[in-house]
Length: 571
Image (cartoon, rainbow, N blue to C red; front, side, top):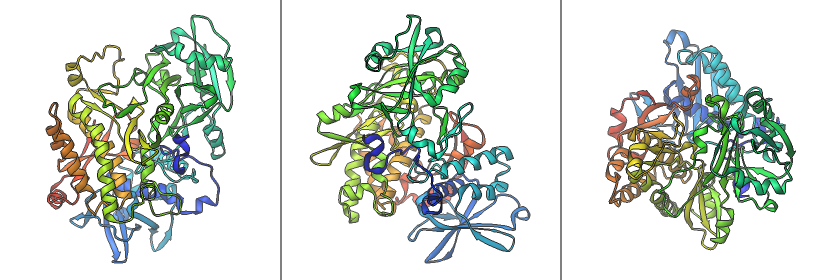
């Protein structure tokens, strides 16, 4: 069960767990708070300056509103010892990592000051500063969602920078999820539905592939004009609202365990079913409503290196409605389970993001613990080997075929040799976030006629594709590893630059050199999660140009900080 138990770092996508009042008083609540405060600064929603003494530094937040409207408010948060944040004209210029922040958070109104760590309360305090960016109702909803994220406390990790890293917010008509519901979500009840074939879009040999499972579970058969579709029982009210002709054949408990995404399930070994079930769940987890759009159910990309295993999405079913907002509420993807293949190859599987996590109350990451990394030299050597393996597998498909994998740490699974503990390769999952450059792939004979129009996986914009990969691979995945090893100011980014350049220069075909130049631009796009939420966007991005973290420590870094313009753009 590497998916959700591995190294006690499971549930990395949302970090859900059982709430207790005592835990709300512990530092774990700051995991949401530090993401919120860093994100507000990084998105340019406020200005930030550095103050305090040499050994007791604070990051001060300042409103963009005229001074007369916010003169009575003050806001500061502690900076970890040794934190270096570059400034321009007295204001913080580079991206602030959440891990650079530490308690206390001190807010002031008039003559009084108080310490407050609850992100919902802090966001309400800051909301008057943000009223030009969103209406009052939206700001109130965001505060509630931050409170929801903060109440799931036992596991403190999630997305490395998103303040919704543990959000699980049910959408009507689903009942709102309480912390006490989490055990059931980890071992969910499944419902098997009979649905008219005319209400569905079936992709691949879905019915043949799922039949062995239906037989073992003794699911009643149905007529030829109907299809049996599994769904989470928690999703039934949403399904019945949109698929009134669906009939429940049977519900079954304790046959599957939830993976990190909460809506993808691994069947228990005794059912000998070689696929995961990826199902719709009308809950907002981080930015997204975890339903499945029809274009996601049409298969994954090809042309990937052999050492980059693929959790192939071999067959699927989803709603046939023209309105995707309805169709996505009943979907099931059958995805390869690679556990048996890993066992046969003497490997174990681990979500890549787990390597950057830390055990509770421990200052060392799992990578440092597992690989016995103590000195800076040890960490630099391990980082180099890790990044070589990662870039060798992820970047060539991008440079040659225009296939951009959403290669953040939750979508890549590290394949680790049981004998040597070496990271031998990776496996990639979740093709809903893949981006494919249509003009390039058409040159290799790929036909996109079978995909429905408006699919978010397809793009004509090459640079937009490259930007998305930079965000997921460099800013998120590699950035998290570099930061966890304490190498941001100790040569880590120099190693990443060297490896990236070497891998791309070896590409004799494709656009390796052009891609390397693009990745080494002075600025890159930073995904603005809060602005997107404020403007009601998910599939459309709001991004901000920020200094390219890949250049940190290079001779160009200071020049970049002094010359960049923090502009917003929409894609």
